[in-house]
Length: 335
Image (cartoon, rainbow, N blue to C red; front, side):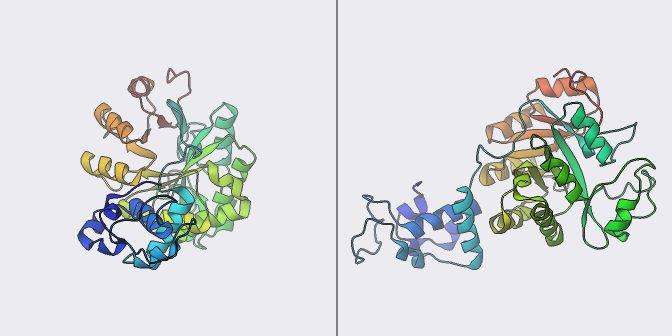
């Protein structure tokens, strides 16, 4: 287990608020874990730590009571450390360099944003294995695959948020295509374990987070590894990770920057501190230098939405890991 400067300089009770607040939450979880377990066998205790406990070869759990503050949130973060060791794991779902991702499950018949069953099946049949799906909540609080705000464009009867799940599923997108609930999409993934999907819920409210986990519970836990869940601002991340501790880990958590709009420095700092594995950038706001900085911070970079073949080839040559696209084929992108 790693040695932490905060504890190495003295016993846990000497951690002062100013130094504790400067440590990101993943690191706090690991510090708490180190404090809980005590020194490894043969390792000297920190200067000033209790030495009156009986000699033992097992970890000394009594030291946990010296850590301040020990709150319910700290215990959740400690659990997160036990589950994930506070960082990326190579088994998580990450797009390989040069991946094309079917935006809104892929364009079909000249229609974008369909998020439909037919679009998924079309692009899967063409060899696409990475997808993106938009999510929205119905009036009865069910997650469906739809991008709120394009109801008129796709000739739906009303706003998705005012329809029940049953009514939504009775519609035809653009008069032709079959809409999907999130559960329906996960059933398609369950039968195709080589497919992965970025989920863009637009906002991470408690109802949305619960809906994500409930859909996985209904379909089966194996599908969870195929899901890359997007979040939009630093404050979303803790809630999403805490839900993973309680309910199970997704394939990856992904930072999509289109709502937050951070500076490059803010973005790189967050990715570095929180060990975020994938970042989604708008193609208009990205630069080769930013892609290189995010790679240096350990993240993979995906751009949205790129439908121009020449632009796609240029970005792939610049080293981006993935491009979200409505219609580009692998051949058109030169990949």
